Image 1 (spheres, one colour):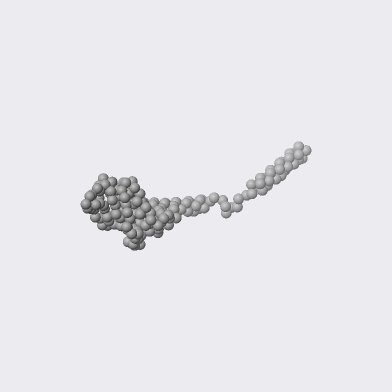
Image 2 (cartoon, one colour; image 1 turned 135 degrees about the vertical axis):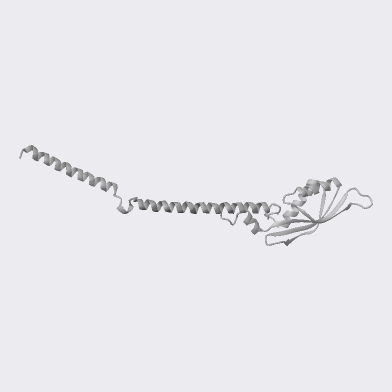
Length: 198
């Protein structure tokens, strides 16, 4: 056997061993993925099915959220004519706002008695107080316009107008009862979305 043939066989063997060792190094460095973790077509299809289900669930949740938002907006629209509770008691707040209207109209408002609160429903209560207003016809008219434009509104539950002085009238005197409708704390919380978790 020629000497060159034995040497080329050793070189081939050495190259083969080197390739095998290099392959082992590459395999250990890459930390081969197990066969179970391979993305087989059945696994991909299962994940696609799960993605479709999750997408449908998300769309249904978004639809429910939109419906809840629309219902809350409708409640807010319906609740516009009602006072909402503030930091102070509703009776004090309503009476104070009415007195501001009187100052803007430049009329004298004398409040008769204390404000009275009554339950109208589970969501609404009324605040009512008696008033006596004196002033020039123009000023009292201005107050009535302020009341008409007030938001939330005030309502008259009884009203009588007469001269401020029977012998020497210089203006008018208006007596009556004013009412405001106030939402309960619970109703306000629902309308403003406090219970919705959104």
